[in-house]
Image 1: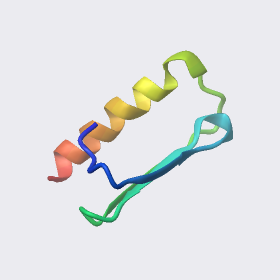
Image 2: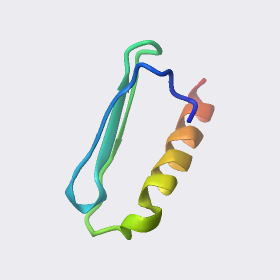
Image 3: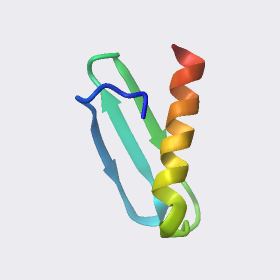
Image 4: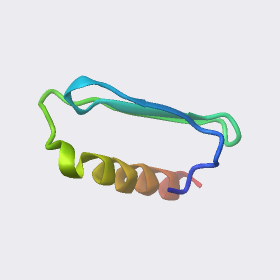
Length: 57
């Protein structure tokens, strides 16, 4: 992941996730209306998070 090592993050039911990076003053939220396949969801969120960070910084 492109985040700093100081992120605060969490995952919730239905595939929701968030992180807050106080070092870069950025946050990311993923909200879903359906259940995600858990086996690949963390990898998918990591890729999506990196894409968002790369587009911003």
